[in-house]
Structures are given as C-alpha cells and as structure tokens.
Image 1: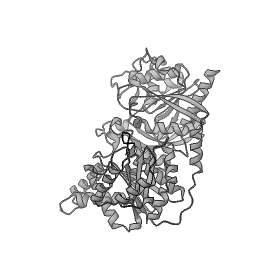
Image 2: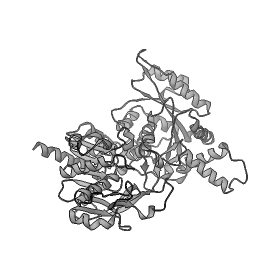
Image 3: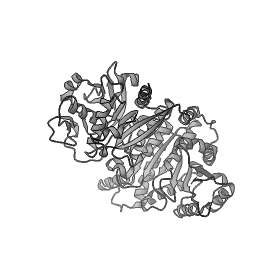
Image 4: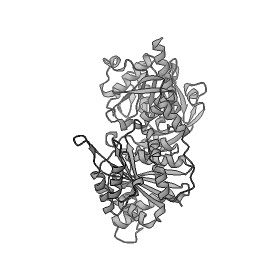
Length: 538
C-alpha cells in the first residue's frame, strides 16, 4: 500500500508549494523509493486549457493529452518521469463527475451534497495513483491557501483521509511564510501560527512545517513555532530563498526534510541519497564558461510563467553547454519593419514562442525575416514554426497575403490552415490536437543530426497545421519539411536550407526537457547561438 503526503500552503500564495513538493519527491526518489506527485487545483475550470496565460501561466500538456497546471512541469523536470491526466485534478472536474453521476441516477435519488459526495470524489481521485500499485509514496499538492473558500472541500477530504488512514501512512506538510519586518529588524512567526491554527480549525493537523524566509531561522524561532504549532522542533524546516529552484532539493536535504517525513511514515529501509547527476548539473549551471543572448519573441513576456517550460529548457540546455543563457524578452506587438533591426541587434539566437490569436503576429513575422536574412540561429515553436512558414511564403515565394486562416480566413494563400479533424468543433476545452504523437525524420537533415534518430515522439497542442497543398513550392525554394507524421502527413518540422541553424517545429519540445535529459533541440540551439557569437568575434 502506498503512503500519502499532502502539501498545503498558508499566509500567501506563490510561496512555492510545487517546488517544495517536487524537491521532497526528488529526495525520496534519490533514496530508492517510487514516488509521484499530483496537483489539486481549486478553480472551477475543468482544466487550464481555456485560461489566458496571463491568468494562470502556461498550460502544461502531458503525453496522454491532458491540459494541466504548470506545476506538473516542475514535477517532470525534477523527477524525470512523465505525468498524466491523473496527476492534475480541478474543482471543475470533480463537480463535473459528480453532476454526471447524479444525472445518470448513480446516487439512487439521494440529495447530492458537498459532504459526502464531493469530498468522496476528491478522496477517490487523491487515492487513485496510490491504488495503482506503482508507487511507494504519493505526494499531493493542494492549490490555493488555507482559508480560501474554494479550497475547503479539499481540506475536508484531507481531514477525512488523515482520520481514515493509519497515522504512519499519512503526513501533512504545511508551507508557510516567516516575514521579515525591516523596521523592527526581526522575523515574525505570528502569520505562521495563525495559518496553522486555521488549518487545525478545519481538523487537519500538520506534521511538518516548512517556513519560507529571506533570512535564516535560528533555533529559538524554530522552538517557538514548534511550541505554538504543536510539532517537534525538528519538524520545523527552514526554506530560505535560493538562487535557482534546482538548489531547493539540496537545501531540503540539509534541513533533513526527507528524513523527517520518512520517520513520520515509519519507513526505515531507505538508501543514502544518490544525487550525482543533479550535483553535476548544478555545478555546470553555476560555473558557465560562455554567455549567449537569446531573444524570446512572444506576446505574454510580461508574465514569466507564460513561457515557464521554455525558460527552464534553456537552463537545462545552457548547463550542458556550460553556457549562461541570457533571455532577452521582446514583445512581438512592438516589433515593426522600421525598428526590427534596433530591437534584435546584439542577439545570438532567436526563439519565436507559441501562442494563439492575431495579436503580435506581424511582429513575429518580422522577427523571423530578420533571423532568416541575417543568418541568426532561429528556433520556432508551434505558432513560431507557423510564422516561419508565413514569412517564407510572403518574402520568398512571393505570396504577399499568405497567412494562417486562424488570423485571416479570407487569405488567398492559406499556407497554415485548420486541421481537417478540427472543422466543426465548437467546444474549446480539451478539443485541440493534444498529447504525444510520432514524427518521422528525414535522413541527413538538421533534425536527424539533432535527435540522432529517425523516429521521435513529441507533445502537441494546436488546431492549425502546415497546408500540404503548398508543399512543393516550399521544397523547391528551400524551406524543407524534414519531419512528418506518417499517419496523417502532417508536417511537424521545417528547416531552411543554406542557413547555419533555422528550424521550426509544430510540437512543444520544451515540455519534455528535464534536468537529467535536456531536450536535444534546445541543446543544439544554444550551441548554435554560441557558435554564432564566436563567429562575430572572428
């Protein structure tokens, strides 16, 4: 039987529950245990697929096509194992399931209520992965903070699980804030005390308290927190700000968070932590030999979480190349033909990011043209790849009004068109081409050189595709489709002949980059940027 760890948060949002959960999972995994993490989000959307990135950051996509919370990206990047639909559950999905059961008569005429029906469905989902027989420990992160109205059913479900399971099978880790008041020159524990008291009032008693802080917590403060929050002093864990999220597992190792949790779970047969690859990665990350400037062309650049997986993939690939990657955010809405040279000069590489809608598209097209004409290493992802196709059609093939039917339904040259299976779909949620699909790569192509393989599998999230009616024109003029889905003929990869590095992909490679397995396209792109910089220096 699996054991369960629940990670809750108090005082304020954005404390880093996902990073703490992923760090704890990494440490337990490094000791030889089979671990998985799941996220329960309190919003009523069925999934984040219909949310604007400004609302909730990027939408992370799993192999099985689930549109999920971006914290699942942290889980995969830390643990180096894939997640699935079962790893992310929202209030919307819970209520949808219960209402569908009620409509089907499954409750035999009973009055359907939050307790027990909603909480029973939450508990069922919380125990699902644990009942699979694949894992020793299941970590569940609860979104939101204690005291939020929308979080109450989740807290109640945890209370019931804590009551139902043997004491050694369930641990509650509560993440809270110890603010530093500059005027008083001291750390304050009262917000943490109130947060724990609020959680206890709901019947959930934390076993471990992790304290986010900007300053070290001394033993006196730890004892005070332990006394008033009813835990042992060794169960009060300091979580100071780190220079990178990838340091957090090592900081939690120093604080013995994993050992404290294992003791609470009565697990004694664990091995010493094996973190050689992790330490090697951190050493390279902190000791770069080179530095490159990569332009990230997007329309959500004000919010870093909108491109979270891309930014993390650059960290992974930079470390492999012993290269610090400086990301220069450039808002595509503000790029024009008149200012593109001043906006993009000094860059060593250019990535045009994914997105939806017409806003900022013209700027992305201008950026692609700049990269093509100046032999600047270029990498386009999803919409970025489509913009490369449109730019080439307009400025090389001579189709001046070439466009995607997403932005211009009346274009006379729809080089990017709605996928056939998407026509007639009206519901927006969960209806795109989602999840992992195979792609065959042409021999002697840049893509083959990057992947060292002729068959790959990558994750997708799109409705529009390369229009194969124009395939021959593109091939004859030098924009080559070097990756295709064999079953549908869908063009997955395009690359430009006679350019040092110019590649666009319809899929999202950033979603499969991890600390231990950086994505090969990002690794090659950073290396190309490094070569470009060296060539400028002569």
